[in-house]
Length: 192
Image (tube, rainbow, N blue to C red):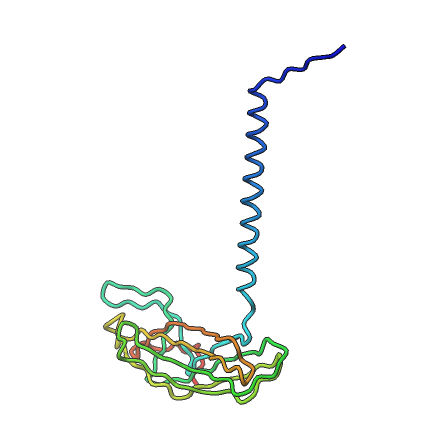
């Protein structure tokens, strides 16, 4: 005897729909996974890592008020000249020579006031750290206790590529600070 099995079209449509949804989900997940792998490949560790920045004389962090504008937690330099010391580290297993370093100080909001100081590290051994000092940097503006914008500076430090010396990657770091020579330095800050 032969048995006849009947299948309702409604059930076939539901099973096919679930199958199509699973297939689309799997394809989407695979595509997302491939995109993340591409991003991970492009996000490699830097060859030269900047591990510390020091300003001498020491800068202070303080709330500044200019008229009705208050700058919360502003980093303030209270002198007309300062020194900038940067610690860098070779993150590779190769020796680097003649590493070009560049410091750029600019007044925010005024493109005509910009100073660039080139420098160079003679050698940087694998895993070693080095100290780069830029001395007697003149500020480009001073808030003088009156203007929140006249003393805003941007410092950008760049390590430029030099394939002959073993540096292929460019590295850059920047930070903002205010110059206001009217701010009193607390006695707890070390004066140098």
